[in-house]
Image (spheres, rainbow, N blue to C red):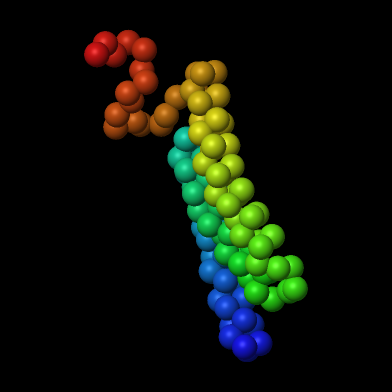
Length: 109
């Protein structure tokens, strides 16, 4: 059982690190605040969740605490990204080369 938990932890650390690196690369490489929030808000949350799974499997942290933290992170991550994107839109930060902008004020329904 110990070997299976170690293998699970190692796999989760590798996958979580991969997701975190991809999220940070997206943050650095993407052109505007909205696409950067997409990269960090989605991919970063998955990276941290996998690292929490690894911590719960490797240490005697307890799965109950880990699951509670994962649930809170899955709820708070998208809400935070949405709030930041809404604030960026309200202060006037525009998208770079938008294909479609449904919130543009000069567009009448």
